Image 1: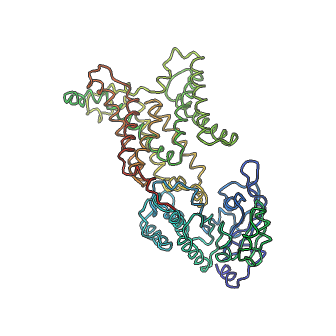
Image 2: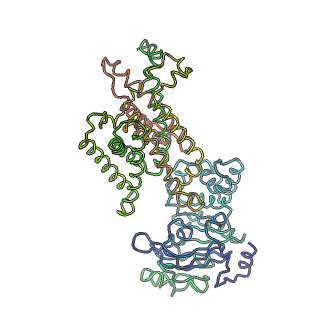
Image 3: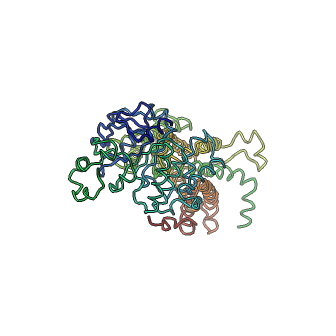
Length: 266
Length: 316
């Protein structure tokens, strides 16, 4: 963690990530069927950074996250999490899948979902105890959802569901957070609440990576970007990498020039 | 009718009705328990598939061994169930079709193959027929040596219990333990498979274990009560239970209650119901148990406290 603090405080992002960087990916290729969704992508996420993964729809942003964590099988490529195989560093990582990827009609209350984040501290063949409940309540408090603890998850709005997912990730007390589109379909208040929690995580020296869609908020929320369109287009600090040229290359003709002009680019 | 009930609960009841009712309950609960998770994973059809492929399994076992004893039959059914699961997986991957279509394809094909096997081979000398496969013969599982309730304490009489009873009891305990011991893992992976995988739950292994538990329940129950009950119990009690509560643990509890009620009422109505309407004939207990579970589902659809839950969803 001291290493993470150092990088965060100096504000310098190393081009060559240190060996125990939160995430180092070499040549990651994932394919659904015959067409690769992600092709030979390299990435290195330095400790203490906040990175946005950006690219058009179907560019493989979510697949990149899933492939890096082994949630979907990799065709090829090497992935190191804090310099280790994911299986050996699992408890240092919290992954937040897309909200729409689960069935919110599942019979569970808000607190039940947050308790899932404490799975690692419960132990084999055992059930959640009251101390786990207290921890889960603290996490719900941090995302402003404590009053909803006993609510059925199907009764929540999209923004509330996203906060519950974030609370579950907080319960994991990880050093490295990977979130898949945490701002998709949420209200403005939720977006502010999520950003403030993510910035808190960064202040604590933790590392955050988000698949992100809204280009206009990139410079405000993040300090690094990873531009993907099946292949890696560019990766680096927002100031040098979040450029009109790189965005044009990432989105091809799909991004109107006027749109690019409106962004606060470097 | 009152007189009927009083005679019905005496020695004759123990001899003729107690074991079929208990076997019915054990079979119903053993299927309903894994059914809860199959339903929430949108895999309810897998129970359907497995109970259909049991037929080619037992025909195959008969053709190989030439006997209709229980152990080779159950092994044959078990092998067929595993073959079916593997075939579904292959069709899904190679054909890139949705799981429901793959299941439908595999189980109808294998069931049809079982019927063909039955017709083109000489099984006329033994009692295997499609009717038996569908409805079983719950009413025949009587306890000859029972002389009354006291026989429950008599080791000699107990040793003559229909073998389906201890077999199903063991299966039920096994499935209950599986669900209890892996409760967290089943719950998390059913709700959010990607998250479960990321926190180190072996989701594929767990899915396979769930299917194996389903197959064991189907095969053990099939022998006693036929596949109609098996299919109904995988789906109806869990679906009814979902309409009663918004918590997984309570849902599983309700499904056990509904399965038990279906088995008891179904057996009693099948045996005594037609008499109340002046008919001398009893109807199939298995068919009646499945019907009762369907009626419970209709009632919970109409009156269950959580039946409107999707309509209450707040807008994003």
